[in-house]
Image 1 (cartoon, helix red, strand yellow):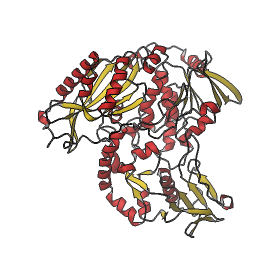
Image 2 (cartoon, helix red, strand yellow):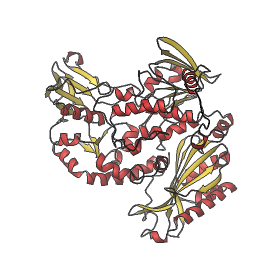
Image 3 (cartoon, rainbow, N blue to C red):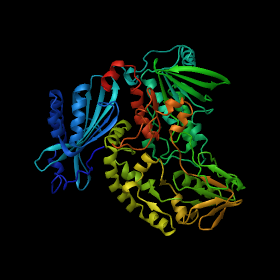
Image 4 (tube, rainbow, N blue to C red):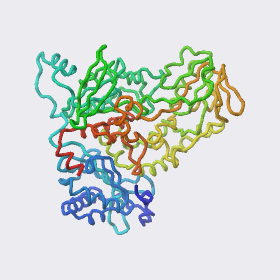
Length: 604
């Protein structure tokens, strides 16, 4: 991790009194000149020259293209070390400025005191095709230097995606049905990759692998694809907008609602698997996965149609979701005395049948709010117990601020939006979001003040950066408001947060301050456990012990293990929301491409 503290490239920090006039900034020419010098310095091995093209407080984020990992280098010293160690190894060539709709180099002022040129470019390495995003900031001397650069592997040479012009061009007269059956049953050989879990993360990686021509089998323990969403509480609805949630190769139709109900998404996932001809075995729980290091081969044992099956694969991808089924109900005493129902939010299904009764929802995260909202809609006397403060952001105001110019109705293609968002290192995004969070709070001021009046405790996220780092570190601690906050502010959903739960009673719970609350059902929306838990139930103990922490943030600001190296050879972890899975599933797929020379180059 960098020893220096990152800051935003404000005009005053750069020594400028005001931003350059837009009419005087020839963004394409400036970007082209910078890239030409950059390419020349790389070609000559001039690391000093490369470093001199960056301001001291700068970032270089790489997604596989140059490091075969997700890495962020901060400051000229780290960039110098990185450039010295890697650029000569990967042999960067063909650096070229991109142009066209949504790709032209442009001059931007995201805040009144920040100005930069954003430019897109492409390049090649010895083994791959890559893209880049560059941001140049002005200096008092009239020069423009890099504040951020993002390099991303887009493809492996010799392993193009079979899409567009490379799709199957031949007619198929009467052969498809049998061919598809044999492929789905793996009658002609075991798969190259086995994916365990058939939710959005499993389907995304399955789709990416199929497009690369890699034989892949997805194993899903539930009876139907999409059951992970279909079997959740009925009131569950995505809180992310549709433009953010598209899946690879097959975006949602233009008629799709902005916020998709869980059951509708479940059916979409099932149709997605069929349309893309993904090889999915449902009702196929996996009992074990054993790795033979000498053969570099996994042996996976599963149950299907009442029979035990054993398959081998070169890679195993675990796509079991955040928490991996390790759901936590706090060990509150006397649970056995309670005459009502105790359930975790992951197992709760509906408020139907509880009309006229009393419910206690423990936890004020997104699922806690959703479930309390559903109880209220069904005539249940519901109380939310808030254990700690919560970040609240309305979807109406928040996403307009955070996704402007990327994931919106008039935004760029999803692939370009992904490049833009990915080009901001998480540590820099945190600084940007501190400003955005403050502005969103001004827009949400009325509901925040009304919540405060009834005693609901709010915060502004880690270091006042909103929900992003809460999601990346904890996968919780926030609520993207779609209506429950107003019900709490209006006391239609009751609130309890002046003490902690001491124990269960026969009719409800008793709190540490002596107060009591009766309930017929208690729903714990209390978060998830260690995502390694479910994997360790399948792999051998010595393999499970090697797993690195999954999710959370490392010292460089990158997500731990997920989409990266798990700590176990040829074992990959896929998880995250729909947008993350869409974007980074490609990185996992590329890492399974069978190129021994590729691995020797990138691991050297």
